[in-house]
Length: 83
View (cartoon, rainbow, N blue to C red):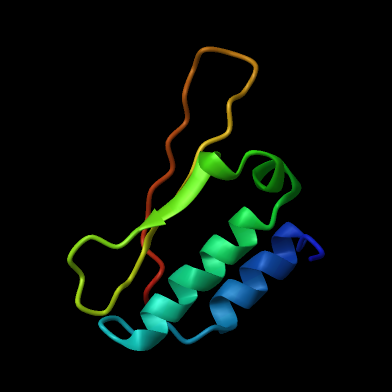
């Protein structure tokens, strides 16, 4: 799978319907996970990314990824992907 540029990723994210509380929201979460897990680093380190579903009736995943940097500092980015 070809890795998207930042602009391509942004434009694609904006174009995918992800209505809050719908199955579309769950599909977008799966797409985001596919993009992350398909990245070269995460193909080599598959245990450093994943998704959690909890008890959500729509199975909307919480997507997460971890990549160690060169320092001991940590950056955490959180957000939501529904519209």
